[in-house]
Each structure stands twice: as C-alpha cells, then as structure tokens.
Length: 403
Image 1 (tube, rainbow, N blue to C red):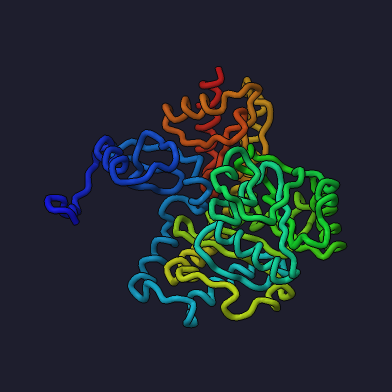
Image 2 (cartoon, helix red, strand yellow):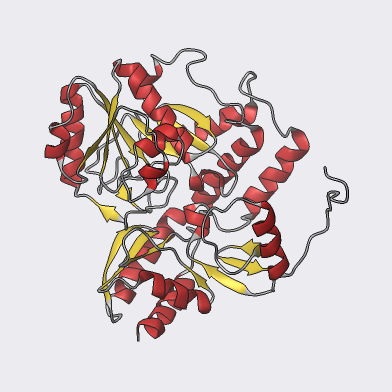
C-alpha cells in the first residue's frame, strides 16, 4: 500500500461518511438509495442513522426468509465453526444434503442439481447444458428478457440497453416475442439448442404469459428436439407462493428441462443452481462444468436453512395470503390500474408513468420498493415472511401518496 495510506479497520455510523468512502473506493454500479442499512430483522432494516425502513424490495428479491432469519444465522455460525470451504474436488455432507433438499422441492423429473454462485452463472451453465445435450448452438430468448450480465447471459438479454452494454455480444442468440409461440416456431430450426425464458419477466414490468403459451411452448420444444429452460432466478424458491413457477397452474403444469435459481436460494449468501433431468445430466461428463466457489460449505448451509425456514414458517402459504390481501386492498386505490404477478413478485401498475415518483415518495415514508423498465410499474419483492399488517402499512402509504 502507498505510504501514509495504511489500511484502517474502524467503522462509522455516519451515513455521509459511509457514502463518501464508498464513492471514493468503489466503482459506480447502481443508483443508490439515500441510506445505509446496518441491521435487519424480518421485513425491516435499520440504517446507520437508527431509522427503520419497511423493506418491500428484499435486496432485489434476495431476502426471501427475511433479514437475519434465526435458522439461517445459526446454520451459518455452526458451519463456519466446522469448515468454511472446500471445493468440489471433495465430497461434502452439507452439499449432499442441500442437493437432496433442493431436488426434493422440485418437480419430480428434475433430479439433478448443479451449484454455482449467481443467477447469471446458472443461466450460462443451463445454456451450456442445452448445447451439450443437443449438439446445437443457438438459443432463443424473448423480448423483455433479462438473464444476467456475464457474456452469454447478457447476449441472451433483450431488455432496454442491457444487451448493448455487453457488446460485442456472443453469437447464437435469437429473440422471439414473449407470449407468442408462433414467433418461436419461426426461429426454432435444427440449429436451436434451447428456448430460455423468465416465466414472469420481473425487470420488464412483471409481465406474464397465459398458461396456454407454456403448454404450446413445451409441445413445440419436444417436437423439434429443443430444450426448454425456465430462468427462475426471481420466481423460484417460494417467491410466487409455490416452490417453483414450473409445474404450477400458471405454467399450465409445464415442467422444463432445466430450471435456473439464485437470489432467494441462500437468503443473502451468494449461491446459484441449475436443476435438470436425468436425460440432460447423462451427457454431462467430468470437467464439462465447474466453478471454484460453487457448492461451498457456507453457501450450502444457507441453502438447507433457507428451504427449512420457508417450510417450517409456512412462507409459501403466507405469500399467497399476502398477495390476496394486496389484490383486494389495492383495487380501490386511485391511480392503480392493476396488480401484476403472483405471490410476492408483484407489479403495481399505475394509470400514468409515475412509478419512480411513487417510489421516491414511499421512500420518504421509509418504505422501500423497486421500479422496472416500465415507467408505470412499481415492483414489490418483499421477504416471504411479510405480515399482512406490514402490507397494510404499504397500502395506507400508497393511498396517501396517490391521493
């Protein structure tokens, strides 16, 4: 280090100092909220200034079990005292348990798990699996899609400016119209390995397709020897009120060949995964896939604890109940046109493009929400433990803002 610039270990509770230090030493990423959370419990975070915010954003759909769920915290403590990490070159009791538990939550035909570190990595590996299985190269994704920021994933993204930031894009990516099987059929020739989609397009404004679309898509993929991949990085692990969107009534009971997961899977510990069938797994050989940190012991302990917490606390049922409450409560709010989505992946659609203004006004009332690429849609991605009374606080604040 430079002379006179020795590493300092002290921390600060001043938001101004925290923000200034980050601005000085960190590359610019997102436009940030004007506060610094230093603690959290359930659906609430506490800032460096001692203020409490109701978190309906969940760190972008990550904090599914709530902030610092006791089961997750204790599991991480216990694992950290036992073994922090060893790579996939060894067997692991906690990795074996995580894989068993995750497969146990999935539709029956998805029997194999591959662990990685993030959603974009999961999507890249899913596309690689499809290419290995079919011997083909092209992948079809959709208008409004977002699959991550690494090379293959951002090239599969057709939302706003995101794909442009990944130039030069990886070849072999085709774009169909979301919700239109006909547009897929026009592209799905003998060069196409997979059709990959977010079953609910969250960043595009919580856009959904009809169940018939998924049924026809499954039929078309089977007919043409194409793998079907569901990017459930946001919809998975209970977010929609069921473990997965795949196999649900909203999906027309369709199950894909691969599901990708991340975000909520580790309750805040970075972890991603692919779930796939025996048929796809049969073509994957040693060294075809790999990642140094994927399947690490701390992450696997977080996965096990997350799945256990969701089940033990009845969070799937809670997500459906709170969704029902919000649908009923928001129906009469002035300016609200509809409530999109399922479970606790919801988009409040306004009559006018005012989502960012509403978000700012709610933030002034210490309620955190998200926006989307649709200026009319405010996104709600709260912890699955969000209480009805807490959702009611949001409704009251929204009525005040819209009024």
